[in-house]
Image (cartoon, rainbow, N blue to C red; front, side, top):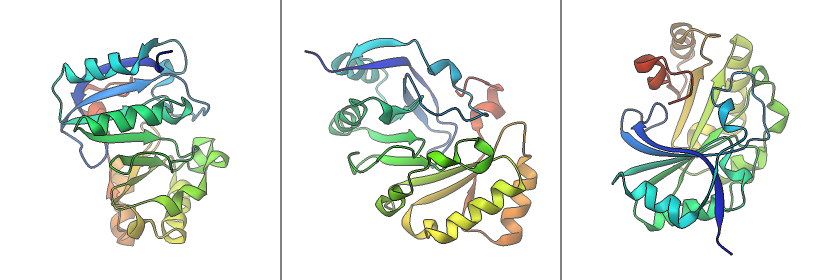
Length: 215
């Protein structure tokens, strides 16, 4: 029996976020997510999609001849073969990143993958889903992202930054304003005022293309 995944789309674009922002990247968007963050810009990936074998997925990725590959969703770790796909992409020689909600155990993910862990804030509506056991598994190859909706979210994120020593554990800590809820300039002022060891992250795809679909 072939190993498969439910895929919403595979496409080639510029990375809009994380430490490789601006670099041409192939995105593999898996279908399905058990979370319902109110600001989600990929609700179209909650259902539908196409069932593809891992070999077909690898062929489609290779057709773009990429250096960078990002496995995203939805929630990639919600499908059992998501971990296998990440391993195979690493074996193929790509620089691989994983965008995950942090609600799932990341321990089985290939250590070559840069795990972008989205720690959910109170404003997301899904703060109770955070799996804090993941914090001890972070390495300098990983990234932690906070999408902030308000000053309250910012203060909460700062408390987690300190509590889990995230600037020491992860290679990058990213503070991103929720689109349409918090102004980037306001968040920038808070970061500067507090001299935080974090990177302000703006979604490049929304600046360039005003793309509500998260590309």
